[in-house]
Image 1 (cartoon, rainbow, N blue to C red):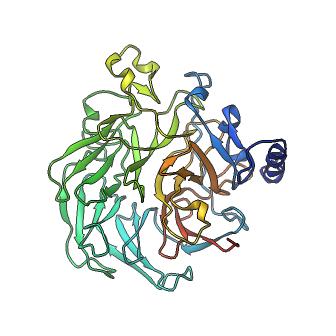
Image 2 (spheres, one colour):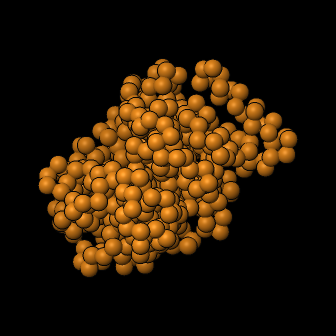
Image 3 (cartoon, rainbow, N blue to C red):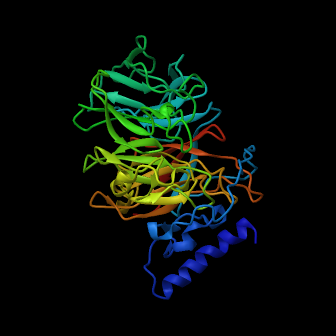
Length: 436
């Protein structure tokens, strides 16, 4: 069955399930168990999935796959697909590896073009979806990723940038489109993503300030898949610093690659979007999205998702077995969950308020592709329901090639959702145009 035909049939199947008594939700019922583990051909706007630890596969129940995506130019007529009532348009194109995108307090959008080693700023003051300003704010960086403004609030004085090996900041005044001064190094010795001694591996460094502005969080992914040697020191964790880069401490650890960081708008809790380990089979280990507990241990590399020991570390660190925190939302394995943001706008329908959106860059360690989409993570009273919903799909061709790979998500001043795509070098704008 072709992808196009399957997408046409799937909503009818889900609707029939709802008619038979399943919980009515956008797209139909929530897929659970093995049904939730499907590949990209089962993706469609509104499809929901819920994966639990009871659904975990057995290590090596399938071979470990090397199935890297073939990135192709966007085919004629191909376009991202969002739920009914939403319109997807191009906001900016011909960008060089657009990664994290962040809204400044005045509404400007700051974007990390990581491979170009620069930060770009866009301004769409009238909210028509076309930026009037498109400027390079700063260049000469080292694989920049995370961006944050300090002090927290409407009048920041600095823009912080997470290089792969450091945190720097630039002086900033409301409306600046070019840095008015040189980069000041705040943290100079973060384990890097370069291939120097102790470097390599996961290179992204996201940044987030606590709501009170007293703590700067920095995400640092592991160097390896599951190694536990000295090269993993100060890695696979979220580090915390004072705003001036002093007083380093470990906020949480055992997190293989905490790519994205975000703060819930009402609870003030820190959340992260995580790439878990590879080479245990198609459906192990699920990536995840979770709130982060201070001092929490999330298992890597010895355990995963609770007291499940990685067979490559059999018998190691038994004292940690019962200390592993189970994350809030388990995702399809190997989706490569990257940036996330909470919806704090008022353009979308009310049921989206304070839900999370996360970009799924797409798999390589799976025989059948998963990811290559943006998902919605429903929240109730500041807590995740455990489900997630396909929100923006359509980046995979019928042949299984890939033309787009979502990375960053941010809520614009007008309430639209901005999505960066480093496959096509585009920032997509998703606006709600339906009836509320």
